[in-house]
Amino acid sequence: MSGRTFTLDGQPVPFTEGETVMEAALAAGVYIPHLCYRPGYGHHGSCKVCTVAIDGHNAASCTTRAREGMAVETATPELADMRRALVEMLFVEGNHTCPACEKSGECELQAVAYHIGMAAPRFDFFFPARDLDASHPDVILDRNRCILCELCVRASRDVDGKNVFAIGGRGIRARLIVNAASGRLGDTDLAKDDAAVRVCPVGAILRKGDAYTKPVGQRTFDLRPIAAVAIEEARRERERRRG
Ligand code: SF4
Ligand code: FES
Image (cartoon, rainbow, N blue to C red):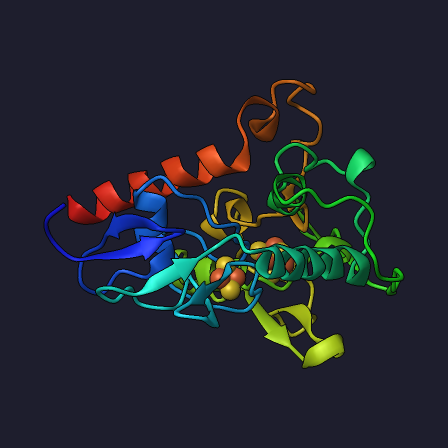
């Protein structure tokens, strides 16, 4: 194989200068589970679900640039257990009701949990008190399901040019806030077709009237596993970038 390469679980993977390990892996058809990364949305690096071992040291694959000759491991037992623990934490620190959720079958958190073989979380549920904002005529914000990935923040700022969302507070007190004097979604210029609405990987931002429109068996992750969906999305974005 010519050009620049690194090894991913022992296999050579080509990359171009400036690409991250995640971007090169997805382009090569290798899925690394991730939640706060989305092709075309810049790098955030908050969820750590995409952590891999690079030359023996753990690092987020979505923010680490590929380097010639690096040895990347994605699936050691330690990494698999850490990834499961991170996803389990996301489930217990919010209020996720997968069987009843409108996003079930389309939710990346649920699909990643299936992919990594998560069963019941090993941690106690927090059952936090979180609010729901139904003030917008077309969009609902349910903070119970928010995983603070900031994708809506980036989408609203960088794609929609609106800055509707932000993250306020830190640590356990962090929450998604709405940039309006009232703090209510209905007092913003958010539109139902905005990228910020479409990008949410879970059921925290939903369009009203869209609930349960796809029957079980025809939802995105009923038809294809998240690995295949993510690889295709990344390749599409790569082609779009290259024109
Ligand atoms: S509302 Fe959705 S997109 Fe926004 S931070 Fe929460 S989970 Fe991420
Ligand atoms: S996907 Fe890399 S840190 Fe979230």
